[in-house]
Length: 402
Image 1 (cartoon, rainbow, N blue to C red):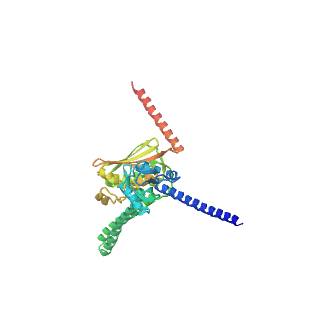
Image 2: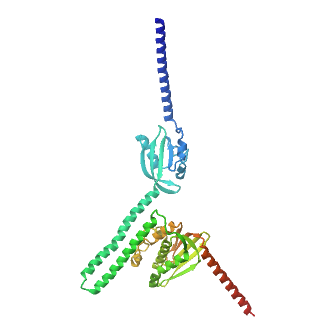
Image 3: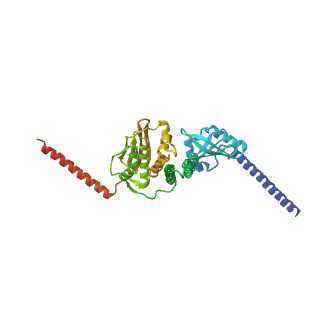
């Protein structure tokens, strides 16, 4: 009996000892694996597949700043597997994250091809040898925010002038109440400033509407002839006052898909600009050209022209190439911005050609659509009639020739 108990006790001690030894061995093996993993340049399982599915620029670098994995968009910034991490600012960010042993973030400029882009980068240490870098391009976001700030500042400045003038003229009228001639003079100026304020407010609202995310609602097949005729007619008084002749030429019966009011205002703005910057007794030309799937509407003048260094800014809000002339003509500096956004909302573009002293040509390019069937039939009938008349004249001429 004593012998059996001793045997069982020895067996129990052996099992416990063996279990402890096995546990120690397992712990040691796991610690070794963790150490190897931490000191290894091998990526954790599935990391590469995750990177390939990401739209942001994401790279993994080792302690020597060698890229061991990269997402597809990273190639646009010149980041390729097996190459060193580019950019001094980015390399400094990785070193900061490794030294601090917690994620580090910073905004910086990186080159995408030859173009510098503003990005926000975040570096996080994932193992003792590997660091994950996530880069997000915020260039457009920053540009939009800057445009918003500029728009608010410029709008406040532009509104201040007519509002202040209206206030001063009202005081002048009150102080000159006993002088009818002065009252009429100040009242005329007050009316002009009120009209300018109304025009500026209207254009700001139109520009805001065109820049909003809402789609154009009054879409239909629009006759370019109708748009051009309405635009020229809206500026007929200004043209007559300035002694300018507006001439219409080019193709007829072209159609585009769009909002007739928005398109008419855009072309009218171009005609108004051409009139304002042309010398007296000059001509402004409005021509239409159809080129396959594109309709081009060109507005040309022989005015002062725009220096090459200023042409890239001409579509900016409140930008005026000639400040003095704009003040004389009552320009708001919003006309060309409205043109740009109106054309863009219709899937087109506006192109500028200009030379100082030779004039300017603004060309609006819009996607063409087929003319409505009933209009097409009328056009074909007119063309057929003209062809018959031309043939009849030719035959009559041959008959008269001896």
